[in-house]
Length: 331
Ligand code: TXA
Ligand code: MG
Image (cartoon, rainbow, N blue to C red; front, side, top):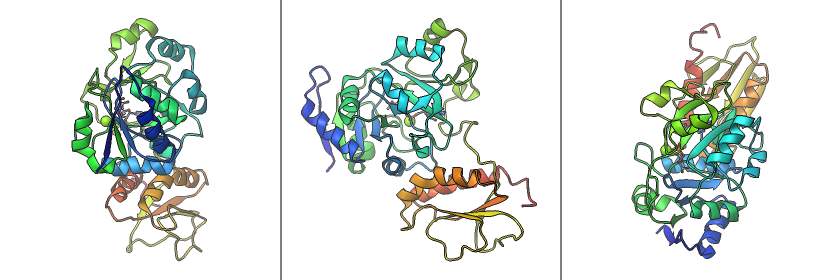
């Protein structure tokens, strides 16, 4: 049985928080209340633990995840290029239901941002979330604590029903005061772009920094991970199957699932997981793709993985990356 530990938000006792924080430090998964919805969190710097979040959420694809911080100085390790506008927003609305996008620092594993060059950061206001991040002494990467296709949970009961056994511990801090996810704003653009309407009204943001652009995805019901800016490698990618012949005379890279038997024809090989562990493979996927993409290859062949569990999300990523280039049929 998953442990559900109660923490009174009005009178925090640190015992349960410290227990959960220790789990997070060790790469465990903790569901915790925020002022918006319950999050499913782990150490943001631990790629393997973040891969487990995707596994538990059963998402058929990777979506970028918000990094939750305790204090403003925590952003130093996470992002850069924080301008005056962003500072004004942070000073006014943090802690609170506003998530800001910044340029991502190399310390943050690529799986957290699903390979994007930007990272979403938020400082939650809920006392339980705040104490948890503080005691964990690390930023916490956390999506909403619901499986794919379900509504975001606003009570610990929802989390128990939706994710139950798959979480190491659930911190029960009562129901979430706002009950709607945070507003997501991209401040890396000359004119800030609203990516997801949420708990902080756009008018309040505009009263501080002026007009904000509404992205097309923020006008319709949002669909995370469908953002047009999703990272796509420059090098064409082909999914390897037994019918596909490897071309000669080209600089070819291989994205292998486990250690490949034949390597001679490849200029460069990246292995997702020598021991064939899907979680490790997911944790390595984006950094392997980045390295292959930067190697000046003509084409990258990617081994197909069985579309089960995290294998589905990995293949979704590879299919989308390869479909983009299907028009370049000469390669
Ligand atoms: O209120 C909230 O934001 C809750 C609590 C737990 O903090 N979290 C939450 O996370 O709703 P999630 O993963 O369910 O939604 C995060 C949204 C998604 O739409 C995702 O695509 C977007 O933020 N997002 C995250 N990082 C992004 C990035 N680098 N670029 C664009 N969009 C990003
Ligand atoms: Mg969500």
